[in-house]
View 1 (cartoon, rainbow over the protein chains, first blue to last red):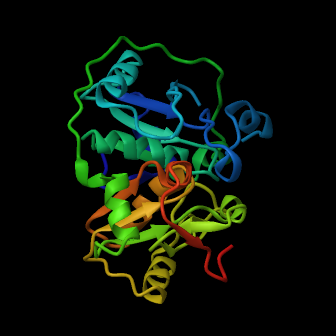
View 2 (cartoon, rainbow over the protein chains, first blue to last red; view 1 turned 90 degrees about the horizontal axis):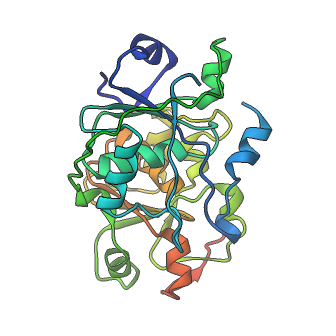
Length: 49
Length: 228
């Protein structure tokens, strides 16, 4: 669908009905401790889009 | 976003490390991601989680994996709807085809730290978390992920002119194998794609990154002045 790893909303809209398409919500990943800690999914969700 | 898919991260001491091939294949295959899937990942636009997952997929040989530039904000700003409904797909077969050049091992990084390797090692942890560290992996060159990834813009790599300037200032060699590290391997995955866009041919993510390095008490040096 694209040679570039970064795509835009128009790319998605063109392919959103493609049965091969899988969309991954990658926000729901918390990881790390201390200096490498990152927010949890619920924290990101609560912060809104 | 409609038709979005939840992907769990396995619990490990270094939680962001890529899952073993069989586990990875089973996990995402169970979610309906198979060999013929086209995968789009998005994140909140400030931490490159989407890049991390796409790098995972490409590490396992699945090239039809993409990142939504700008993350979910881009979708919302375009006036598109959100949903809380998580779709369910029939299980699919995902066949891992490991691309070993995309991933740097601890031993490969140790060779750099001990001066036994000509590979370029870049420390690309983002500013906010890097500021909490006192030390670096020996032999690492600091190149902030916050500059590579345009934190303020979200979900994008820096523009080509900025990338070229950063590469030039550090006198990096695009022809050399280059390892990117960060706190845990997430920002490094974003840095991986930024460097690929900047013309680096042979880039690898140090998957364990600082979490592993520090935990295993491997060689470190005090951070250079000027590091955030």
